[in-house]
Amino acid sequence: MSKEKMEIGAISKPRFEFRSFGRCFCEAEKRMARLSIPVPEKVWERRNTETYIVSRTNDVNNTKIRDGKMDIKTYVQTVDGLEQWNPLMKGEFPISATVLNEEVFPAFKVDNLPQLTKDTYTLEEFLGMIDAHPDLQAVTVEKHRYGYMVNDTICETGEVYINGAMVKTINSESTEVEDIKKTIQEVGLGGVENINYLQAIKRVIGMINKPLAN
Figure 1 (cartoon, rainbow, N blue to C red):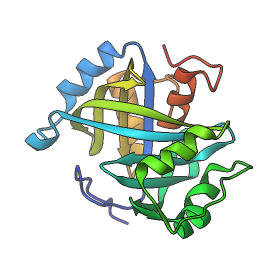
Figure 2: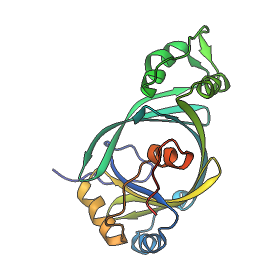
Figure 3: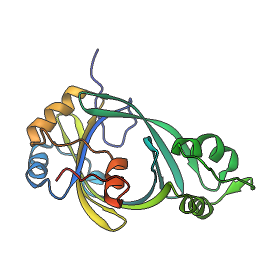
């Protein structure tokens, strides 16, 4: 079976991903930049702000909101230490009570869900319900990312501000596990912990008592 050609920004089969967060990946960042083939100018440098909804009782559904749109991905499997996630749902605000009850709130895996009395809810109303729940928290995540491609894997380095606290991130993702493993070794990330966004956010805000990779 032929490998799928990775293209930055294109829809592909569900990808596997290595990502980590910490204070510095300085040498790995330099190697990633030098090993990268040329990439489209639009991904040289990107900035965006998102709101992640984290739950004390859920580590398998990743919920984020950007530009009034909700995106939930769900964990599928881990292969050779690399995680695979699939889209679970996409929604847009104002959002219906039916979607909240049947798709969004179940993804958080918490008890004592709010009783919905309206047909639709704005983003502000939704975030108000999140803030009122003791096991849920909305977290502002600002991303400043630099895109690369190494060994046909989509890569990036960047600064991530989690409620204003800055941490560094680095990643490699592809539909091909072996290509990611090769990239990890070549850029010098062998042995570094694979940490996804949910885990990183929970560690920074104190919901999980565990440090980042460095």
